Image (cartoon, rainbow, N blue to C red; front, side, top):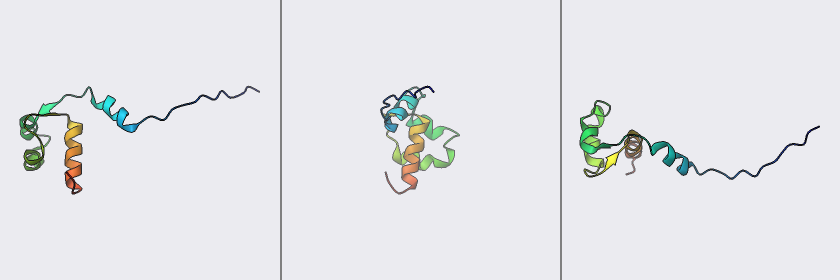
Length: 73
C-alpha cells in the first residue's frame, strides 16, 4: 500500500481571491453607470451612493447596492 502524501496547505483569504477576480474587470464612471440600461431601475440610488471622480466595476456597484438595500452604506 502506498502512503498518502500530506502537504501543508495554507488557508486562502477570500478577500485576496476577490481582489484577483475583480482586478481585471472593466470599470466605469458614475455617469456611465447611471446612464446604463443595466442599472436603469437604480439610477436614483447610484446618483446618491457613487462618487463622481471614482471608477467602478459592475461587481463593486452590485456590492454598494446590496449594502444599501440591507440598510448599510
